[in-house]
Image 1 (cartoon, rainbow, N blue to C red):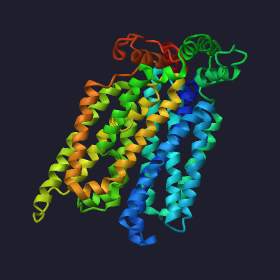
Image 2 (cartoon, rainbow, N blue to C red):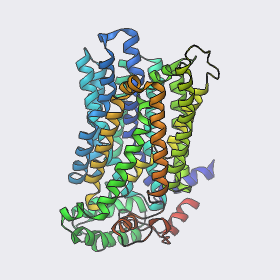
Image 3 (cartoon, rainbow, N blue to C red):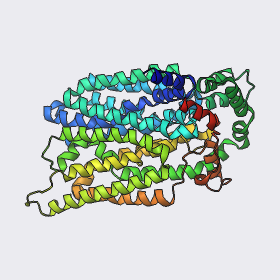
Image 4 (tube, one colour):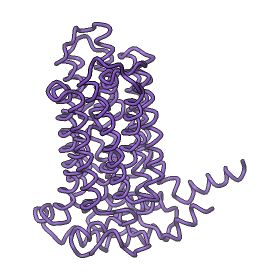
Amino acid sequence: MGKLSNRLAKFWEFGAGRMFLAAFFAHSVSISIGITQGYSAIWIPQLQALGEFDITMEQSSWLASLGAVTNPIGSILSGVLAEWLGRKRAIQISSIPFVIGWVLIGLGQNIYWLYAGRLITGIAGGMSTASYTYVGEIATPNTRGFLQALGPICASFGILFSYVAGYILYWKTVALLSSLFAIISLVTIQFMPDSPAHLVKINNGANMTSNSEAFEAYMFFSRNVATAEQELKKASTGDIIDKISQKPLKELYLSPETVKPFCLLIVLFLLQELSGIYSILFYAVEFFGETDLKINNYISSIFVGTIRFAMSIACAVLIQKAGRKTLCTFSSFGMALSVLILGLYIKYYEINPNEERILSLLPLFCIVFNVFFSMIGMLPIPWILVGEMFPLRVRPIMAGVVICIAQIFIFICVKIYNNMVDFLGFGGTIFTFFGASVLSMLFCKYVLPETKGQSLDEIEAYFRGTKKDVEHSSHSGLVNHAFTVSSENISVVTSR
């Protein structure tokens, strides 16, 4: 016990623990995002079962999709706030509309209160961009994947919380409890410093005296005066400022290092949404109803939510060992296989409705495996890549734009899910997910570059064309101008 306490103390004292805590507090806002995503799965069935507000099928689809329709507003707003006020303040501000939205839903007197609350929590959900930008800038290349994976872990916990709470509690109680998570996020991030990269950038490379706040941020994470001074000197007089001043803003936004990752991420997010990840998530209880399982739909959803949460933790471990590209390719293959089997099963009984169903648990296993494989790569990794692919000067704005477009994709896919089932049948909808998963596998295998273990500068150089292959870099140091320590320092921290 004494040895464990000693290791934990040193883990905190030498900076790694501080970096982890800052990343966790930043990503804790994703708990609220997860609750927002999973809430409609338990909310709509409760409203229908209790006959409250006499909601129609059209109204229920709006209640589900309104959680995503205002996400784009939040994404753009988050990028602007992160640029003007800093990453930390943008994260804090995103918690406020969560509180307002959940209170409106929890005290809702009619359908319009529910619409308003859903719209406002949707804005807050879109403001998650700042947390990925912040963590991408405080992390080292060796720890960035794991620390960014805390976002999907928190989101998965939020989804599981909404499923479990919705099974046990009244939907208004769940909404009011959900506001507490946003308040916790608002308070805890206050104790962390802002991104050192942002602090240096707003001083435009001023001397160390003017950059005292940035120096304190470097010190907080490195716990070493010499390292903090070295990194501040690099950031103040070196590559960051040079790169910032090299190009006019308009030219930088149209440069290869901005346009290439933008196009890659847009295609990746489109394939992610078309593969059915969020349709299954938003309509989990109804989705299980369509499969005609002979077990409680809420229990099925909780089971899948548990698998999702467990696999989000597994992904955080895997992403330290395997590359983003490899995980996304394998993830897409597994998703394609699982929905292919499910589609064939559903289609057979759509054609032969009078036959008695055998292997009645097969749809549940297919969905579980689909969630299992999605959490390995295709669900979390696109969000992780948003925080590491863009140049520093345009990172907050471009991350906001990409997530804005991704949220539009989510809204469309969630909104038209019922229409797809009506038009294509449940089996046809599943086969659409299969086709998108196959395309995703090919895209990740042959187009998506690898960024594991690469500094943000190296990734930028790859897209600029001054570095041939981001995947085969021989660089072993941790040159992240947002926060840099040597690999030797990392090994000392982790081994003590």
